[in-house]
Image 1 (cartoon, helix red, strand yellow):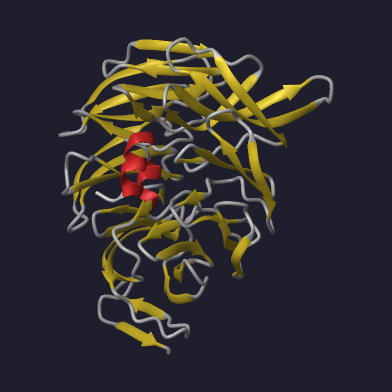
Image 2: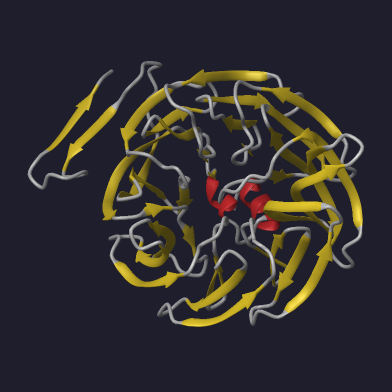
Length: 403
């Protein structure tokens, strides 16, 4: 296992963020469509069971039925293994832990389902809306609601309930050494503002170890909101700024302004750089050491999903397409139309990439791509354009390649 993967396993053992980066070498990759399934829903971020190489899970929203659908499917074929209905899927990506699937339910609850057959098992209700994804840390399920940081065991029993005064927590929960890193907003009475904060909380007793004020900011309610934790540093964003923060003491190492709001979804990092996307359609790369710009690119539409790293390549979801980019140079060398992805992200498992897209909420498409190693990059843009049986027709598929 490579050094980057070890780092992710320590900090985000069951979180979707683990599936935003795959590094086994530095070569570029290209994507090819393995299968597409049409779902009449808005499809969210695909998540995985790390004890099962053949299955994956996704939650989707049916506007027509006003309900969420939790689906387990075969990774190889896309065939559905089971589906069940959830009252409301909330604002966080579910997780698979042991023999259960845990997902947000009815805005203020955590529901558990048998991962083998989708049977509903139990529901743990809280008094406030939950706006975070879940993470498994040291055998417990961690998440937040309003100003509370909660740990549950696999039976839904509350093990820890830590209170962060005046906070409204959202996003993700991660572990660094013996502390928990969380994100949220807090009202500053003297300034009459709501500011974005990063907190470090003692995992044993809930004591605040430090807090970092990132300036005036708002609550973000998306599956992929939050921060990135890597090798003792927190990479967070607020409005149009990206921050590098020491996880040891909360000291801001650097901050960098970019073109457009960057805080709707997490930035990501590897051993080489920090990668970001903004609502104004900019994506780029910053140096880890000081935040200076390596490169930046603009596309036509705003980008509302985080980037994904595969070896030497970036996947950028925007302009109703998936772009494949040389992460060192910022060169776009492949583009595949997919439709809109308002609440999904490109997640990786083994040599496959999954993405919810299409024309939601009625005409959703679940994509499975395979990535191929060793692309010959000749510094010219190459676009793959797919129509035909990848969309509606069963008779025609046309591929155009420009070099």
